Length: 79
Image: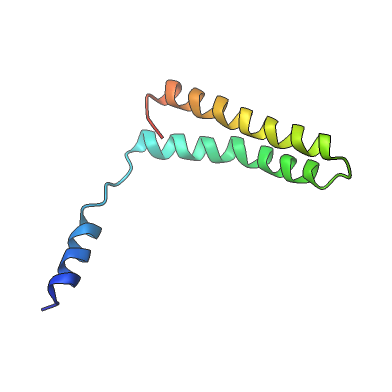
C-alpha cells in the first residue's frame, strides 16, 4: 500500500470529471474554428509594422470571444 500522500493524489485523479459528448463537440468546434485564426494572427505579427501586428492580435482575441459565446449558446455548454 502507498503512503497517505500517494492515496490522496490517486483519489484526486479518480475524481476528474470526464467530458460529455456536447462538451467534446464544443471543444472540437472551438479548435477547428480558432486554430486558423491563431495562425493568421501569428503571420500578421511577423510583418514590419507594429500597427498591423496589434490589429491582428486584437482581432484574434475578438474572434475568440465571439466563437466561445457562439459555442456556449449552440451546444448549451460552458467551456
